[in-house]
Length: 86
Image 1 (cartoon, helix red, strand yellow):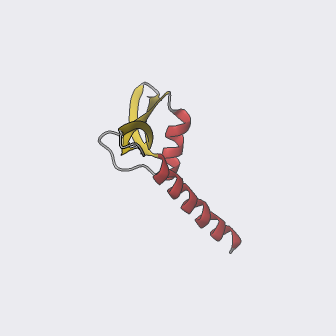
Image 2: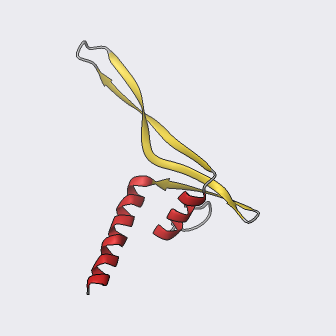
C-alpha cells in the first residue's frame, strides 16, 4: 500500500508493478536441523516486495504481497470471464 493511504485496487497494484523503478524483495530465514542433528539456517525469499517510483515529480512507495496480488488478480479475471459469458 502507499504510505498513508488505503489498500490499492488490483489495477493500481498492476500499475505500480509496471512503473516501479525500484524493487526490493524481502527475505526471511528458515531454520531446521539436519539428519545429523546439526542445526542450520537458510535465507528464503518471501512473497512481499517493496516497490518505489515517481509519478510526475512525486515519489511513491508501496509494499505488495505478490501472493495476495495474484489471488486477487485471478478472482478479478474469473469475475470478468463470468460477466463476459452471460
